[in-house]
Every structure is written in structure tokens, then in C-alpha cells.
Length: 120
Image 1 (spheres, rainbow, N blue to C red):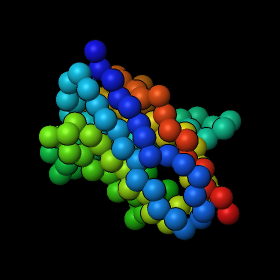
Image 2: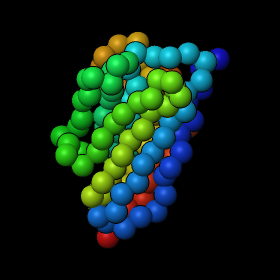
Image 3: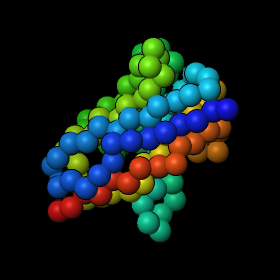
């Protein structure tokens, strides 16, 4: 049984940093990604990392501020978020896929989400 469990969310001020973690169990996937969903909005892609960690992809809105990484020995994925803005406020979800993709529908497994709130 595959499980993805996120942690690290919280309430911070604009300009602060947070690091999200996603612990995976059950199997190892080629691609891990982070998505987010703000109230009243659709879930959107944030960042993805390949199995080796050598390939990453970011949404334009987070480029230069967020860094995704993975530790395959621990089967854990991280999202380092710096220079946070109020518009980054959302529930952040970890997801896993066999494919290298940014499409929500092509991710097979999802975590329960962790809330990130950035105050101005």
C-alpha cells in the first residue's frame, strides 16, 4: 500500500521560509511533485523532481524561490520555500507518478495535504 505523508506546513509571515517534507512508503516512484490548492481555486502544479534528482521543473510563480529535492535512501521529498508571499497560501500536496509530467490527472498517489498560510 502506497502512502504519502506531508509535514512542515504552518503560519509564517511574508518573506519567511518553510520546508515541507513528504515521506513515501510502499514503493519508490520515478517522479515526485508538489501541488497546491488555494480556497476557491483549482489544484495547481508547483514543482517536480525526477528519480535521480537531476531533473526538476517549477511553476513560473515559484521559480527562484522554491527548491524541490529528494532523498531516495529515506524515500522522502522536500520543498524548500523561501521568500514566501501571501499568494503562496494554500494546502500543499505531495504526489507521485511513473511519468515525468506536470498534469494533475497523471499523478497516481496523493498525500493528505499540509496547510501553508503566509500573512502580510
